[in-house]
Structures are given as structure tokens and as C-alpha cells.
Image 1 (cartoon, helix red, strand yellow):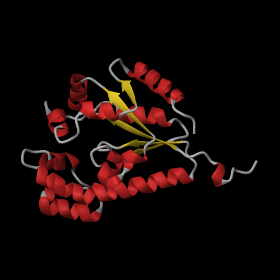
Image 2 (cartoon, rainbow, N blue to C red):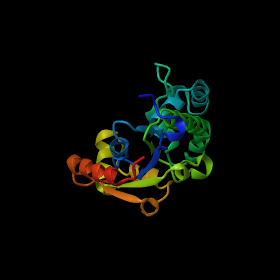
Image 3 (spheres, rainbow, N blue to C red):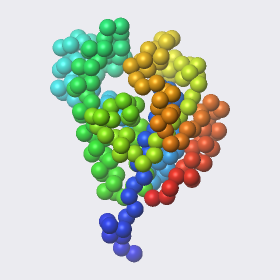
Image 4 (cartoon, helix red, strand yellow):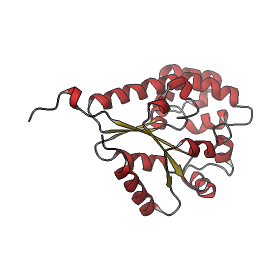
Length: 214
């Protein structure tokens, strides 16, 4: 049977995932996308953007030669220490001025490619989805917003054990973002993530089944 004409292909359901640092957003995004959907993760694209030649040159000039490792790639730990240090907000804003446009362009490209390929679902795992919507419009692109609710102490534990972050780093970084209460308020659905992997997978599967088919 020949493929359906483009006009008969249902539009993709676009889902935005919200939540705090180390809340499990990536796992939820993968579950909501399902095997036929597409997850677009801004953090992965941001890593690519840091290694763009113009950004590497800026890093060497503004943060120092050790901001780029021996392999010629950005040293993310060194960069994070610089831009999230006390008084580093101006430096962070300057870096974001280099990387955010690159990430936004790549997100748009991947959304367009997923639509063209007929993906039934496109899930945006974009940490500042609401904060920067005025610049990129990705939150307005979403049909559904899902908030992943994870206790603060559990997120702190994950960040320290899995990322090697010092105590208090999660709260410090989130202080420059919208509050989790506001993000939860903006969401259409809330998925609790405080009872283990099996329970999370069950909650994601239940929500996925409830979402309007596309």
C-alpha cells in the first residue's frame, strides 16, 4: 500500500517536559515519545554547541585555555564552575548569547525533520522551556506540558551521586529559573517520581495512553 499523502498524515503531538534538575525528565520524555516518537534534548544539543569552533574560541578568550581540554572539546566541568560561581551571572549570560541561538536553530531543525518524517509524537526535553519562551516559542509550540515532580532531597542526592555536584548546587542553579511551583501550575499533567523506576514507568505509560492519539 502506498504511503498516505502528506495532507492525510496526522500532525505530531508535541509534548514539553518540565521539572527541576535531576527530576527524571529525560526518562519521562523517552517514555512519552514511545518507540515511534522523537525526543529532542536541549542538553545534548548544548553540548554540541559548546564544541562549535566560534564558541571554543570564546571560551579560551573569556574563561581561559583550560576551558578547552586536550581533546579540543569544551571542558564542561570547568565552564560550569566559572559561569555558576558567585558573580558569574554576566559571564553565563554572555556564554548563553553564543550557545542558545545555536541550540534553538538545531531544535527547530529537528522538529521540522520529525514532522516531515511523520513522527506521531515529538517530546521537547528543554530545561528552560518556559523561561526562554519569549525568545524561542517552544512552549507555545507544545500541545501538552508535563511536569515531573520529584522531592528536593532526592534530586539533591542524584545530583551529588550522579553528577558529582557539591551540596546546594541544585538550589543555587535553580535560583535563576522559574520556581517549580510555577512550572507545575503551568503544566497540564503532573507525573510523580518518588517511588522508584517501576512506578515511574507505570505512571508514564498511563499518561501516554490518556494523551490524545495523533
